[in-house]
Structure formats: C-alpha cells, structure tokens
Length: 363
Ligand SMILES: Cc1ncc(C[n+]2csc(CCOP(=O)(O)OP(=O)(O)O)c2C)c(N)n1
Ligand SMILES: [Mg+2]
Image 1 (tube, rainbow, N blue to C red):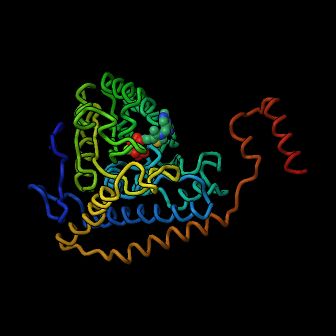
Image 2 (cartoon, rainbow, N blue to C red):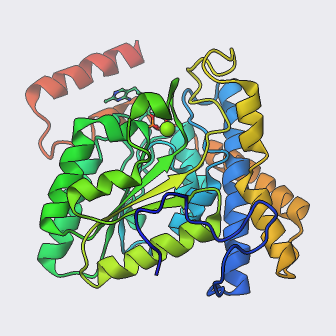
Image 3 (cartoon, protein in one colour):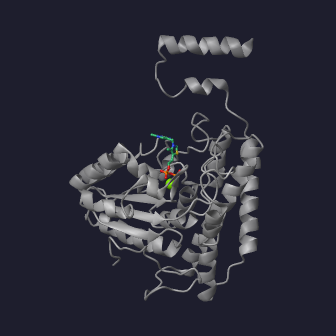
C-alpha cells in the first residue's frame, strides 16, 4: 500500500532506470510494451501537431511533451469505456493511452467531416463518447464540480464505475476546484482527482500559485488521502492510481493524486515561452534530461526487455501521418452543421439565421 502525504514524491524507478525500494512488477511484458508505445505515440502526436499548427491547418494546440509518464500511467489504470473521464485541455496522452484513435483526435483538431464533435468545438478540445471522455473545456477547473456530480451519480446508481478528473496546478487556485473537492469529500464519491503538476500555469510558477508545500497536502482539508507522486515515473503513477482506483471501487471514497512533472514545450501557441520571458532555458533543459520516456526505456533495458525505440517512433510517425491524410480526405462539413443537433424543432429566430447564412453562402 502506498502512503498518502509523503514529503517526497513516490517513485518506483530512478533516473538511471533502476528500481527504487522493494516492489514486485505486476505488469506483463505486453502491458509494459504497450505503455512504452503509447508514451512514444503521444510524443510523436505532439511533435506533428506543432508542425501542422505552423502550416496553418489548425489554430490551437497545447503540448503535453514531458508529461507522458503521468498521462499514460493514469490511462492504463482506467477501464476504457466504463469509468468516466473529465479531462483538461492537455490530455491527448491520456486519450491515446485509453485507446482513442489518433485519427479521431486528428479529425477533431482539423475539423474534418468525420470529427466526432462535428467541427463545432475549438480545435484540440476533444470529446469521445465511447470512452466516456467528456468534452474538454478551456475554462480552468470548470470540469471539477461536474466531475464530482458524475461520481455522486455513480454512487447513487450503485455502479462499480469510477470518475477520474484531471487538471493542472493552476486549476487548484480556482473556486470551482475547492467546491468540487469539498463536495466529493462530503459525499464520499468515487472520484480520483489527478493534478498534472507541470510546475507552470502559463507564466506563473508553482510558488506563485500556492503557499502549500505541494498540492497533495490540500486533500487533508477535504477529508481524503493525498498522494504525491513522481509524474515522470510511469510505473509509480500507474501503481498509485491503480491502488487508489481499487480502493474507490471498494467504496472507500475520493482521493487526490498529484503527479509532479514538467511542461517541456510552450504553454500553447499563444504564450511567451519562445521569447524566454518567464522561464530559463537551463530549467527546461534540466527537465528535458528527466524525460519520462528515456527513464522508462532504461528500466525496460535493465529488466532485459529491449525495445526498438527508433522503429516504434517511426511507426508512430507513420500512424499520425496516415491518419492526417485519411481524415483530410473526408473533407470538411458544410456550414449548416452549426444549426443541427441542438433543437428537435428549430425555433423561428434560428431558422431565420440559417436562411441569412444560406443566402450569403449561395450569393
Ligand atoms: C477560468 C479561466 N481563467 C483563466 C484562463 C486562462 N488560462 C488558460 S490556461 C491557464 C493556466 C492553467 O495552468 P494549469 O492549470 O497549471 O495547466 P497547464 O496549462 O499548466 O497544463 C490560464 C490561466 C482560463 N482558460 N480559464
Ligand atoms: Mg500547470
């Protein structure tokens, strides 16, 4: 059993890839290989999205490079399509780890005809119904209170589903965040709050965010355990969140898991990272050297499990490129989709607006 409220982040593997402490590996070779592949796929997806953003094919993207250990470790402890996920906008690695296809994610980013959101959401704000992956909202901490509502419904209905709600370190300063955690604590709802602490909220660093020693400690106030985990250690994340999920399924109520990681790339395509205005290159380089994928590869090698990293990367690049070609070939939806799906009987004023747009389009 992992201990809550530790001073140091919980780890399983060190930077050198060696085991820390005494623990037995409870994952199969196949699971380990899939975890590694999903981390690489998430990284490659990020790299490719930055390129297509520069080509003007999409207009918004928030990178998750450096955070794959947290997102994939979490994804592999969730039962896809059974448990519910209220994600935040940097969670493409979580979606990929759950099994959402890269093509579905790309269709949304590019707003093609097969986009599950019908090209009506902001780019990179996915929602994937089959995976109970709720549409991403850009409003910080907006998802926290409704996620608690989902968990309360699961409890009320007597299901064995759980809810996972993710957010960044910056989100923990929002009122919604405290309201959601408070209510979950009172209700003992089956919800796992996962803070992807990448140490920056755009240009505000962790010290500027909170006077607490870490985020996990805040769980005390809401009557739930708080786990402080090394988010660049995929096995530590997986082990802690798996244990927490089991406890929640057994009716033991909510928990807060903080995964300490780092955002290697810019905040989005609209911040001053490239101009070096708020963080030093030395800091970025230090965290780049703590790459979660490299660390995991060292561990796999130490365990005698060699992976052909170059081949896996090349396959991931082909996967993303093929998905772009295939989804672009489906074209883009017509202008009239914006008037569909909301009302069964279209109200007169909306019908009038539709006619205005039609006249304009046909002029
Ligand atoms: C309610 C609200 N306030 C402010 C913003 C502007 N904003 C967008 S991202 C962001 C920082 C969030 O940081 P964090 O929660 O740490 O997530 P990260 O981007 O680091 O993954 C802010 C302040 C917003 N989107 N919503
Ligand atoms: Mg952050």
